[in-house]
Each structure stands twice: as structure tokens, then as C-alpha cells.
Image (tube, rainbow, N blue to C red; front, top):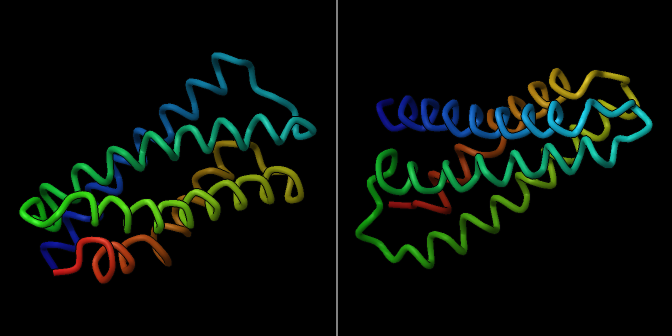
Length: 131
């Protein structure tokens, strides 16, 4: 239960980084219309990249206490899982923004929460940082 709680705290922090980067890009470049979903997807993917880096470092060193294992093997597995994470986040954001007409930030929140609950923790624990 402690590992799960740490993982959730780490995910919240990484999500904060993700959302902050996405928000700043949206505000800095101007909020695009629904017709400009490609830019929204790029901004969201950039946020996800920054959040992913944050998550790997904290998970390896604090959540799963796996710093004594080969970080290169962990990083390779993390990247594999992260590619799926990125694809799911970018696709969900695109679909909810483009076809459901949701504003970018609510679409980002719904997508990121769904991916975190159903995809990330299990694969990180059982595959990336397996003990």
C-alpha cells in the first residue's frame, strides 16, 4: 500500500508538470480552436514528455527504490511503456477535443486520469521497475 501511495503522489507531481507545460504552451501560443487539434495534440504530447521524465526519475529513486538495478534496462522498459502512455494520452486528447468538442484542459484531465488508472501503475510495477 505504501508503494501504491508513493506512486500516486509521484504521478500527481508528474501530472502537475505535464499540465503546467501544456497550459503554458496553450497560453503562450494562444488557445487554438477545435479545428487546430493538431497543435493541441502537440502541446499535450510535449507536456506528457516532460511529465514522463519527471515520473521516471522519481519512481526509480523513491517509489520503487530501484536505483541499484541497471538504469539502462529500466529506461528501455520505461520508454516502451511510455510510448504507449504517450499514444494513449495524445489520442485521447485528440478524440475528446476534436470529436467530443471538449476544451483542451478538461480533455487532458479526463485522458490523463484514465491512462494513469488503467495503464501506468500496473506496467510500472510489474514490468519497468519489477522487483
